[in-house]
Amino acid sequence: MATNVHLTPELEQFARDCVEAGRYNNVSEVVRSALRLLQDAEERRGHFQRMISDAEHEADREGTAAIESLIPNLEEIIATAEQ
Image (cartoon, rainbow, N blue to C red):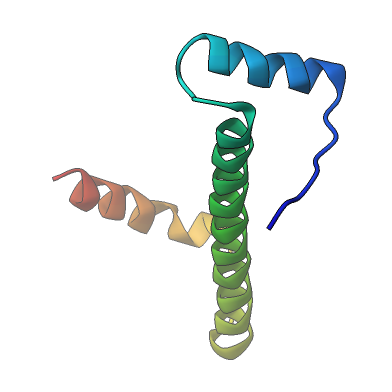
């Protein structure tokens, strides 16, 4: 599948610099690499949003607590995690 991509002059120069530095064989490889990074970032964003949604549902089910009441427990949890 052929796709044309129009880049700003700055991005075009950056892509060409990457090729000239020998890190990529051509501009298409640079674009594919960038799209893979974007895909990974979008997957992480989606995972984070699901975690937030899960936490909100858990808070709705089980209630919430004031941070002041958790501070003593947080220090213990952190100490355990560091071991």
